[in-house]
Image 1 (cartoon, rainbow, N blue to C red):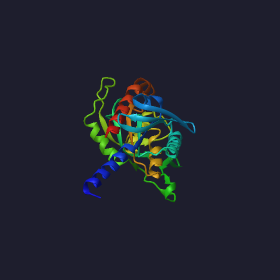
Image 2 (cartoon, rainbow, N blue to C red; image 1 turned 90 degrees about the horizontal axis):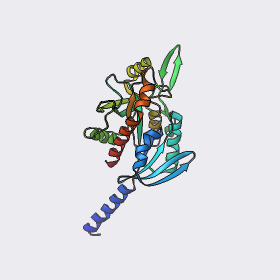
Image 3 (cartoon, helix red, strand yellow; image 1 turned 90 degrees about the vertical axis):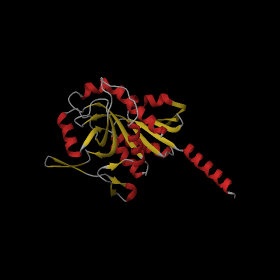
Image 4 (cartoon, rainbow, N blue to C red; image 1 turned 120 degrees about the vertical axis):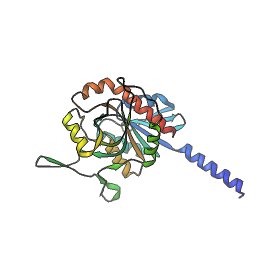
Length: 263
């Protein structure tokens, strides 16, 4: 085969593989995927085992979009159903969270570099010891206590954060923070608990799904990242702030995802 023919063949193969790639995009609630759903071209709706999936393209990227449901169990179940029914090359989780870092205000964006399940462990004499989860695909070996996100998606997210324009929230232009997200089956609206999570885990945000998805993706060797927009500060005003800011916060997080898909 001549060199020119080889080069043409390789170009066709690479182009086909790139076009064939599909990313999964998840949010826990309707508000978190609404902008993404409205951005889908050639949208098709498919239901599998109680989970509704939307396939199509966002700009030029093939995606499968779904609402995971609130909490670690729903998130893990939805991820399992996704992986059982669709071939995807990576997963992006979008949505809102409670900010824990002292400087974070509603509207700020958290790009996770790692995640931890803060409520999985053992309670002894009033003290809680956090345990690492187990990887069933590797003979029940322990996962890292802090599960790291995919390095490529992480670096691309950081690059996007340098240039993207997001909607102001409560008069503040969103800032970007990078760090640990703490996941547990609790909507934190208590300043003491918020301080505890920040102190014990160096976590800068808390939510209810991310680390469970991280565990499933780790077992499936699927690249993933969690991007969250803070709707509150996980304090005594969290409920009020959440309902006040959740819509714009979710839109900003989804806008980050759209930019990331283009990369």
